[in-house]
Image 1: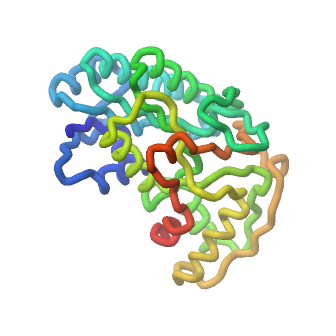
Image 2: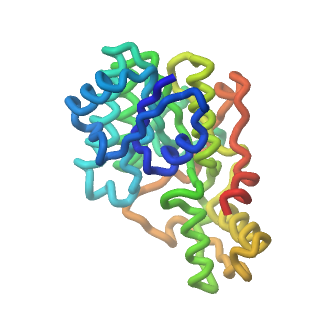
Length: 281
């Protein structure tokens, strides 16, 4: 299989390349090689490479910055996926597009299914939802994978931030009233490969880690492992706080656990994020 990968330098893009099956061929692109907001560039890349599938791991993910950088977030999260979907549909190419738990408002008390009503609270969430809608409208057989709380050995993420702060500070205050499921980017990459190998039906799929926690509980798990692995000599003192005590420009869903029964029905296991956390650290 020939795969055109966008967002190749991000967490998911790097992990996807690490796990590429031996008999697959990849054209790994990031913004410098392919600007997905430019339809002519996307068309030229597809005509030249002739991929069987496009995996869109490119996204504007700076949640707070998006509140004041709306135009760029819309270009990358809406126009870009729309361009990929348009070209994929024209050339009969499978498209896998990655989305987010931030399409929900977090007011639920049970896990969100693929059919749950969306209601994003932030510019980031709104642009990601609009990107989903653009993809579905143009390429109905596209696969959209919603995920959450992604971490890995690459890029910027909560795990790496906690490890850095753990070396710098003796005490940290961590939000304890937002709940979700951490997801290892390597597992997400493996799932995308499996969906392509299975030639899975188009539509939305939820895929996350297998255990729900708060950010505070996630931080506790990170520091426990870091001390066990001698990455840190000791854990900083952790204090749970509320979202109201840590205001940010963007509103975040208080509850964003995703139900993953649909993808489990394909024989795909959820991310063992605790096991992956140990390997990552």
